[in-house]
View 1 (cartoon, one colour):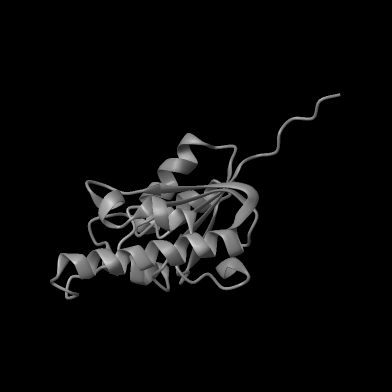
View 2 (cartoon, rainbow, N blue to C red; view 1 turned 135 degrees about the vertical axis):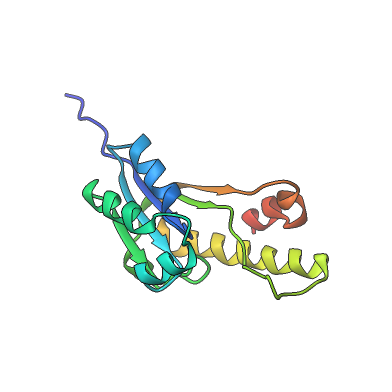
Length: 156
């Protein structure tokens, strides 16, 4: 007999206002979704994103049996995955950035800083979050893949 495939285990990291995680949960209702946010609490997410509805997104994610973890650094996951665990089939990081509003003015230095962010993220995925045959989905825009050396960093 053929057994049905198990539900896909998906981890979203750095989902600032939880809107991406919620959209994913709505599109893939059979998946086991875990959402992580760098900010330490739902209250801090609400304060950082006053024009969004993170409280509503979090509540709906929980109703959909997803889990939400706060204070998880995509670049330095603790050995327990920040409460998220490991063995994910898909780890996704949408539009990562360092939030360098007051950071280096030199575009080259900004690119090198973001390259380091990606290097730490990919290393954390391999070490902590991804299943051995898991996939990492990274969404960048414009010329970020080239200026941040995304493909070579992934291969390191």
